[in-house]
Amino acid sequence: MQVLLAEEYGFCFGVERAVEMVEGALGEGATVRTLGPLIHNTQEIQRLEAEGVRTIDAPGDVTAGETAVIRAHGVTPQVQRDLEARAERVIDATCPFVTKVQKLAERAAEQGRDVVVVGNPDHPEMIGVVGYAPACTHVVRDASEVAALPPLHAPLVVSQTTLKLKTFLEAAEAVRAKADAEPQVVNTICSATRDRQDAARALAGEVDAFYVIGGKHSSNSLKLLSVCKEQCERSFLIETPDEINPADLTGAERVGVTAGASTPNWLIEQVVSRLREIGKAEARP
Image (cartoon, rainbow, N blue to C red):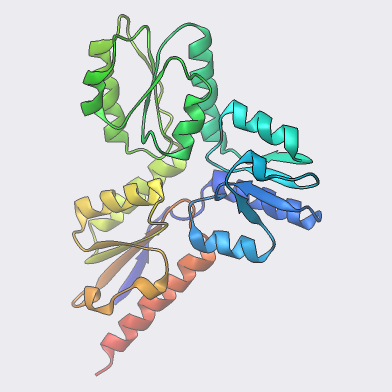
């Protein structure tokens, strides 16, 4: 059984940057607290916890002398101010791609325009973005939700950074019918998301089974699974090698592997190693 890795997979720039910032603070002897999980990967969070990092639920949980970290998904301006008022130091590890969406929304609001963000309204990234333009921002999951929006004034249309491109483009087109002027459409899906989805799609059409390694609540990992299933029905989302069921690989000669943007290399290596073990066991007479 051949195990093939997609051309693009694993940690994206924003996630790698956030982890490096936390590890840098630990190296300086800081007591590190992250507001919410730093990234959407339970195993990597557990590794950081073993080094002393703790996750807090609200700014009020920070005490004097501690370093507070804003996770890669970003927060609202008010939450950032609350952290700065309580912590000894605040490290802003917001992904630069997310920061771009925040600034675009803020600028449009200052100009008196409406903002439509295509994404999951319950996702931390979306909650943070809305905080930059709370009075005029509308979050829709897809084109089907656009019809329920009120009339829109010269709207800006942007997206959650981990969205599927097709979903974004369809929603942007639907916004035109609600707008009093041509919408400003800015594709804010991060390049890492696009690259990983394209690479997964290409490989999924060439294999008998496919594994996406990532958190079950990770938006970009779930999107990768959706992309893979379009090409390969036997596609699975797993968090650890223990979740691989050898029975799912019966008759598979080629197995594809990719990983979400929050999945560390050490975990990817464990999954690949386990798949190769299964392949060797099946090859024995």
